[in-house]
Image 1 (cartoon, rainbow, N blue to C red):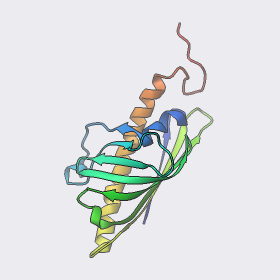
Image 2: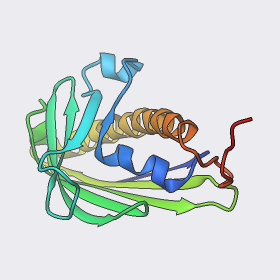
Image 3: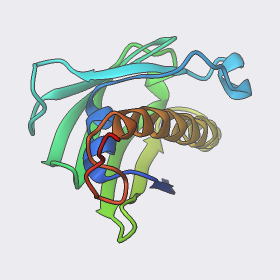
Image 4: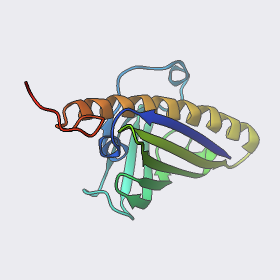
Length: 170
């Protein structure tokens, strides 16, 4: 099964990109997370700098999800696949892979596309597949909101404005 999401951020790709590899989410708790869906808390690369083959770890309020970085094209494309998890629903997941593509826009913004491919496994596979779809849709919305917050904060502290003109102090 596949989930696709797309967002436009009012900042350049270099302000969005770092947060796919190191981020701290806010403390809000959207409704579905209150029902037991693992809520993302943070993510980081475990072995230092992000490169292909290293592990990106997503920490949730229910455990961790380890993901192997498969493709890393700075400020442009990131692909990673789940390789392990301590989250309660880990046995439901037979396959989980995420891909992000960043495209700079003429107005200084960035179009971010996310594609998640996943398969459930075990008994009641179709029911689990539906549960994963609901959980992953919620995770897409929540993470994008946080990445927007982080990227916008970073962009506002940059000496270059969204339009690409150097900001000057008066």
